[in-house]
Structures are given as structure tokens and as C-alpha cells.
Image (cartoon, each protein chain N blue to C red):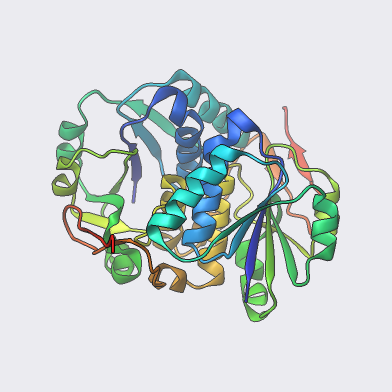
Length: 172
Length: 172
């Protein structure tokens, strides 16, 4: 199962770090690529740097026509929104499908068409919080926590510790 | 069980939105207060506005001596860090304790003392991602998802929909 995360409506200065966090969460929680409808070098560079040091393949793609992209996607299309159905009600159904998944994360104002172009509008609770949090919890539920045990074959590798930090660095 | 979230090392311009997201996630995922060691009006106002519109009590507090604060906290002290023990290994143990919890979220560079002042250093996976994501997944695991069904008694209330948005607004 391949997972793509589509970040819509990024605003340069304001969303720089939020979109970077969205990308890093996508990677760390097992998604295969981040797709954005607005290009931002800063976001791309920050994520690429992490990929280079910490490993595994993760793609960042730019698209100009997001509606066409959503329509053309072959798999389950899931929009994360506080207005949708609570994840607690539909996670089993979503997990049961082995199709590829497109997870759509909007910015402050999401185009109303998004709600109708997708198969599911899913709420990580119906309170305002964060698209970064919504994506993380969604992927954690989808993979039942197994994504956090995945091996990343990077130059940098953490050896988990009860106290302090231990990082292995392989520059060969 | 009362939950406090301590956000350490906030940097004004750079972390404005990240710290706001940390606060909103704390509130939406069932924590009782956000404590910061660096005051930022913008962060406070953004969170207060959400509390006023969407309900329930949520406190934002400023402290000047974070070491004293951590030492004096009566309950389980948990530092979320990518260098710690994987949440998958210790979530059952953490959930079994009914003590109040202090959850510590660091910025880019965490003071090394933090690792020794706490009871647990917990990793939401050992890959770099986001403090916002880490906090959300931690609270989601701690409450086993029940936090997303909690009633918030606010002026604004979402009626979950399969398509589109439905918000009730009570201005009485």
C-alpha cells in the first residue's frame, strides 16, 4: 500500500515550518511522498536534508492542478478535516482497504470542492488543532502504531536511551 | 488525572505557529494546561481565542524557572524526545499510572538536564518529525482515542458530516 500526502494551500512565510512538519511527519509515519500545489524551496530543502541524513526514499512532488490530481488518483482519497466523520467511527473500515491512499491536508481555507472530490472526509476530532497532528494520528491509527518500528536505513541512527542521547553516524 | 504540557525553548518569530499548534493540540487532545518558559502574546491570544469560541477550560501559564517547575511537579514527568524509548514499548506502563502527568516538549535544542529531571524519556518513533505530532500521538495513545469523543461546551460546535461543513453557533 502506497501512501501519498497532498498538502493544499501552503502560504510561503506563514506556513513554512508547518508544511515542513507535515512532510517530516509523512515520512516518519510511513507515507511515500509529499505532494504540494505550491512550491516552496525552503520546505523542500528542509525535508530533503532529513531524507539524506536519516534515510529511506521519500518523494516531494509539485503539481499545478490539484483537482485533476485528486480525480486521477487510483485508490482511497481521504481528506482530513475537523468537519468530517470522527476517525474513531471509520478507522476499521479505512484500515480494511488495501488500496493506495491519498491523504489530503488543507490549509486555513480549503476549497469547497475538496469535500466532494474525495471518498472520505475524516475528522481527527471535531475541535480545531493542527494539520500536523491530524496527519500523525491518522497514520498512527492506520498502521496501528507499527510505523514507529520501521527501519530507516540512514547515515544517522538513534539508539533509544532511557536517559540522554545516543546517535550512530555512518559516513562510509 | 490532570495533564500539563510544558513547552520549553520557544523562539518568538520562528516558533510562533508551532507553539500555537502545540497548545491547540494539548487542548483538543484532553490536556488541562499549557505551560511555557518564554512568554509570547501571539501564541496566548491565538489559543485563548479558540478556548473562547470552542469551549472548556484550558489554562496557559508562564513560568520563569523551568527546572524548579519540573522538580516540583507531583506526578509522572514525561519528556517527549526522538532519543528516548519507543512509545510502543512503554505505553501500557504509562497508561496504568493514574497520577497527574507533565508532558515536556522541547524546541530545537533541549537542555541536557531535562533528560535527567524526568521519569521517562519517550520517543514517538526515533525519526525526526514534529513536536506537534509527538504530543498528539502521545495523548491519543494515553487516552486510547477516547479524547476525540470528549464534549466541549463551546459557542461553536461542529456536527460531523460526510460532505461539507456544518457548524452550530450559539451566541446567547
